[in-house]
Image (cartoon, rainbow, N blue to C red):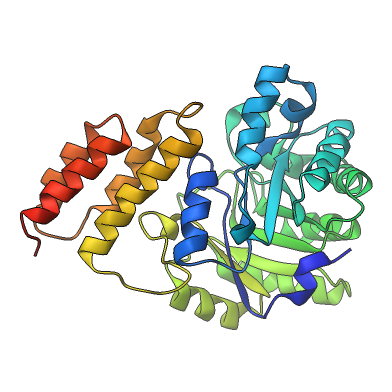
Length: 321
């Protein structure tokens, strides 16, 4: 089942799922100003979706809210239990998602304690079972995987063939091990090796490279050098919903969109998420101009979207350089 993946241009450029960053509000904004070829939700616990209390499940479902403008939109799930993966995949299909992605790369300790995320690299048989379970649960949706080169060491030569044996439609390779986190530069030559392994095995899975992609120009260059089908951009999206459109908006537009972002966050998620999560975005929106530091410090003290808008409008009235 290839679904929308079969219709993507090559190379294609997609946005990484970033916890507490690429939430429903930010994705809606990105879709408006610079839509990538594919969007992912933040990762969501399959166990939580199936086993949580009604209140807990309702809260998790808010992470799976999306707008039609975001399509194709992929639901990213994590678990180490095939039975809950199957049920959560069925739910994702019911909710109208275009695909399912299984997180096999997150280094968060609380997720690894569950045997999920990057920990799955150490249990390849279970990883294969999870892919099969997702396919059973959502027979009409393509299933993909996001992972790393290895856990404590690079085991791409053993790990990737194992995943490919389960026939996911696409594999995103973050070009570092779990142990390395982001402490070393991403090794894109290993993405090239992933493409070679895929070709040697005669697999039709798409290979997406991930790690340290600065902008679209950098993404195109990395894809050209490695032969990957696409590139996934992550941290470059901070303060830059125009990343994929490559527009370079002026300061006034940038600041007004920062205010729009905070309003969207408050409206869509304010009842379940702390407004303080917006502060990591302000650091990126508000930099590189005279008065940026002072404005940023002022925004860091805010507690709601109205305050953000008032401070930004006052700053713009004062004239910008």
